[in-house]
Length: 454
Image (tube, rainbow, N blue to C red; front, top):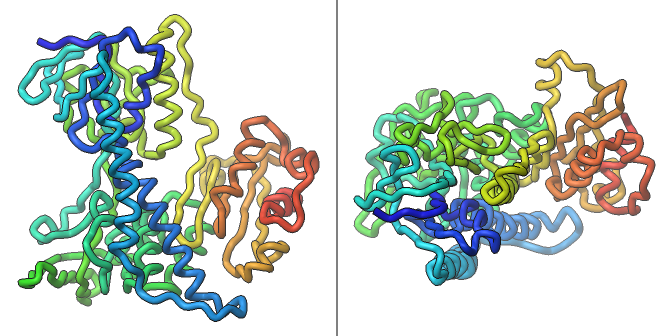
């Protein structure tokens, strides 16, 4: 029976737990898929490389707004796809090869399932460890739509690797994956239809952001809100393609050559039978941890998407650093700080957010001040001819501390970062606005002017 000092389930952020401080440990990693996890192989990195290409294409399509004679036809999809994965796949392969080359690391290329406390079965071999880190991520959630399981739909796992650009792509869902992929494929030349059961896109975002984003997307593509799919069928062709037929709740029917299901993600803890390891999960299936990222089972830690519905790579990276420390410094443990967790959506327009939404503050009965500044009211926004972007900031009326900020528009995730830094430093909105010089006429003046309006 193989035994290790440390066993890590997952080769994404869990792989980064290993550092020089573990050189004298016997370590194992169980990863049945590509090293690098969701972010590297089928998430953050390839999607943003596609987003950038779509941004350039969309800018060329609308160059006439600036007096430019630019156009953009249908993109060379294979060239774009191969450029992206021609860079990513060798990195994943290299990460695996590096770990396998280390004398103190064993890599199991199979999934692990708990059979008891700190005991798992890997490819029918029972493996034990003094310490285990759960970092096996999450997977796509597929809704129980009649006929869906019998058709060759796509998810975020494989939509970025398809062979050809769809003529008509239908996307089920209205969250960040749907928003980003709709921008990518519409920007590169596909006709896109979003089918979303909600009244606005991007549930969980600030309502003003959701309204603006939904309005912009409605102008770019077909957005069917408060609509569900009752039945899906597919008619294949000899050439390997085919036609999807979707019967909608409003009595209409859609036909498309590609279907993307982007209706959320669920944690992978159940795939590892974590309950048999004495590991508790919440009502949604996420592994529960304390502020040191310890699970309910002695000697077992957890991090990343398997623990948190937010499912952000930057939180997983921070958690991996904390677990790495706590593994070797059990008498001096660190605790996770989740006061300021930013997030972004790389659609078009982009979204960058930190802190509660305005509705969150209303629901909590918390007093607040709010101010909004349009991109168009700033020098650089004027130069870009931007007519839809804005920054919204909210502050405590007594302490003058920033409570939340939500920016929608060009480079929104970059612009919100300076507000995050001010919040972490404990600055008031007045200090953020007045105690530094803001470069004129740069885009950050949008943030300055929003703060001044408070």
